[in-house]
Image 1: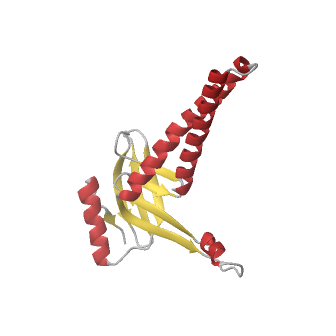
Image 2: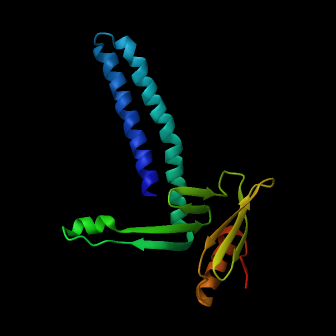
Image 3: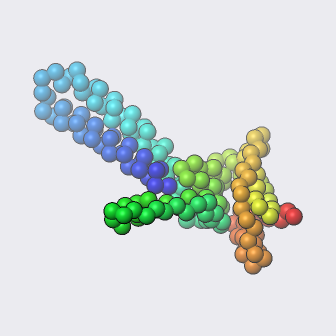
Length: 175
């Protein structure tokens, strides 16, 4: 999610800088400003057109994280350095997959359903070592299968209730 946020912010910053440069060139009208003003405005427009989908992806990621049903922590990495503790903190990373009412967030990849799209969540199957999620449109079915150690009975019951209440899909238990 950090990458999505950074991408959106960088695109916005580039759009703002080049728009400001275009406005300054228009106001000050330095020599040959007519030649490079369209280039500045074109770069600003391209950055703005790149910002809009990046912002939409970041917003979708936020919605998925806020409505998480299952959080799968894939790995936790950390390192020790002799130099200082700030470097050790920087080396810490957690890789997490979020499964929610609106989709799946895997790092910076988003698989979404519901909302304004035609994609819908169709089925959820929880096995001993996996979770399988069927989603898609009427014409195009897709499946995501994630490694997932099935939790205890209490937590599993809670997950089933959340899926049923929030998505109207009752997960099936395999094995």
